[in-house]
Amino acid sequence: MFNRRHALALASIAVLGAMPAQAQAPFPNQPVKVVVPFAAGGLPDTVARIVGLKLQDRLGQSVVIENRPGAGGGVAAAAIVGLPADGYTLMVTDGSMFTINPKLVKQLPYDADKDFVPVVQLAQAPLFLAVHPKLPVSTMKEFIDYARANPGKINYGSSGLGTTHHLSMEAVKAALKLDMTHVPFKGTGQSVPALLGGHVEILFSAYPSLAGAVEGKNVKLLATNGAKRSAQAPDVPAVAEFIPGFDFAPVIGVFAKTGTPKAAIDKIAAEAMAVVRMPEVIAQLAKVGVEPLPAGPEGYAKGLKEESDRVAATVKAANITPQ
Image (cartoon, rainbow, N blue to C red; front, side, top):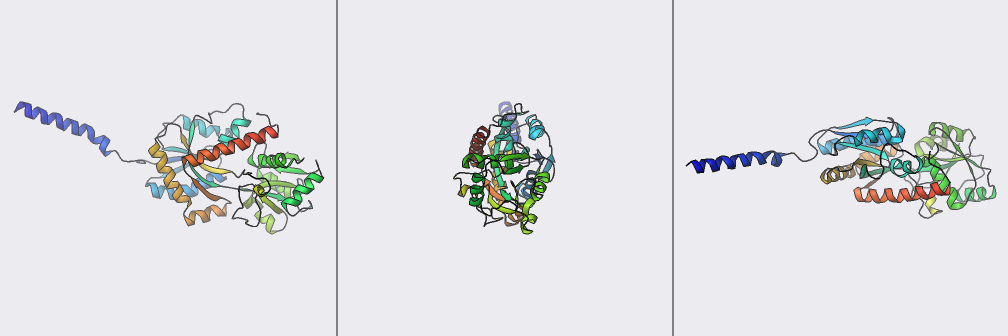
């Protein structure tokens, strides 16, 4: 009798000990925080909020957006690196933190190759090549011909040294062997007014920042820096139609700390891709000049590698030195 009772007691203990593991809820079973390494109102922040609102419905958990701007994404990155790799703290950003910063910043507060892994690619925000009416060109071909015939006479603006706006034009210069002068500004809030005022003749910028000027015929759109034409202006060709393989459209996606469980990454990726395919989300993104471009972890990693290679080639051709 004693042995029987003793055996039953041991069996009960074993069952009770196994229950917590068996009863553990699948990911996620608590709120998810999404850190955006830029100020509120920027494209990564806007995309994070549009997608996050729908994502929390699909996950059954709150998705909290937290802005941590500073140091080109370094403040946010450093904060996440110090947290557990459990999938409950993610980062939504563009690829510049992993493709541009490592080539232009000597000391980063994070390791772009080791600290983070791509979770899901969400969308892209193509830039448009816009020209002031005083430049006697109306098409990309006319611009190329004019620039070749007038070396050193065209000033082009950008939203800052090392930005996608800057590197896009440097890539055009390198591929077509054009001679133009770079005039950097502090953001599109300065560069676009400079274009409208005729202080620079041409620049790359997002469609929403140019739409009013296009409608007022104060600027002309020549091309987009994406791999193909944009739905925002389907009549405008892609630079890739003149330079095969050209693609510098900023891509926005989700990253997690290295070591995050695959189950958590796969869950976020699947649900986020479903969200950016929703018609209402596509419409919301279009209003801010963003186009859905969903891809899982492997596809996103491949795209980042290709982008990194293009940036490296452009930085070398433009002889830009790290600061």
